[in-house]
Image 1: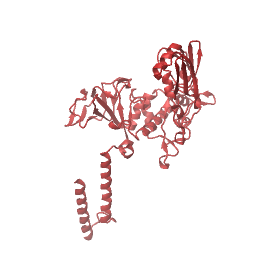
Image 2: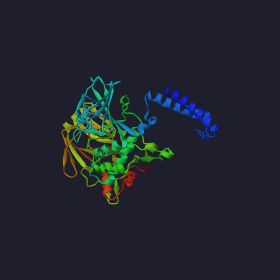
Image 3: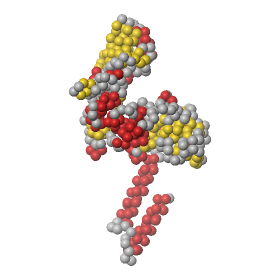
Image 4: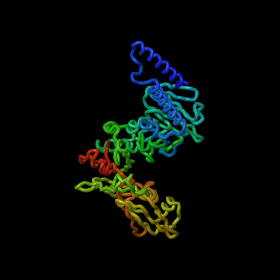
Length: 452
């Protein structure tokens, strides 16, 4: 109806304009005929109708202009254990504006409210919340590394049969300000922080091209499954790194003008002196991901990270402990382990396959993550090259290792920390210490790319 009224107004205006023109007045639409204006407006109406029609269906972010500016992050529970919250307790210094089924509600400054799945305000299963003063919303029902987290933008709550799902929508650049200090220590070198900001931005832009959780229109969650978000208190150094590189991403095979691609900028903690490729994850190496090459992380003086604790490490695992871990982690009982060997290695020396044999059978494990998981667990220590030791955890530090048996003990000697694909964060920091800028850092870890 609104569009019909607009068309009628336009026709009336055009008629009036022509009448005024005949009397010596200025034409309302110089050089444009009534027919041309009609066609132009019809194209606008048709375009608007198409947009509204697409919005009524499952939108793909490529068609949604907002998705290029905002990112929607699913906020997980304590310890990133699950996506559904039993309840959500929130507040804001200037009060909250809550959009519910029956209209808007507002709270006083710092007033805490609790929302559960039984709340009658869910409209089509959703409640939207904003801070009245445009500030941040504190969620006191969850904890992160620095305490109860606060979120810019809006919070969308969704009622489910198990509880409440929470999605934070905010500008991508604001999101990055809380990703960078959560993924890299804010005390690191300025150029390393800039490199991290661009990696995080590039990764995020790739993620907003699709929904990881389409039922909640969320692009990512806030855990290591994507990028850790808002686990560390915001830091001026990290925020400045984001601002100094605003909008910059890593391109491969061209740029936006030449149909290039923004890369998926994988990164990890520490290298062993070399990186590996997507082959570590069982992904075929091809032209589209050729920027993820195996490179040597060194200069003419040697490996950049050679003096860092995780550059080299080793672990002694007794036979019984290893047998228990293999049974639990592979879901296959092969009895008491008799041998452990790396049967296939990939670029940079990463283990791509291991074979573990016991007195009841044999198990073969493929790909970096599954290998690290198979050899992860408690009951042994990992000694870093600086002499410090940590307890074994869910994953072996990296897949860059060799194994040998000595009596009833298996000795694993390895290097690096993380999956080994893309940028080493500690490598980037060591490069920055030696005067390398963020462009040099990124182009070493992602060969053949440009930063624009």
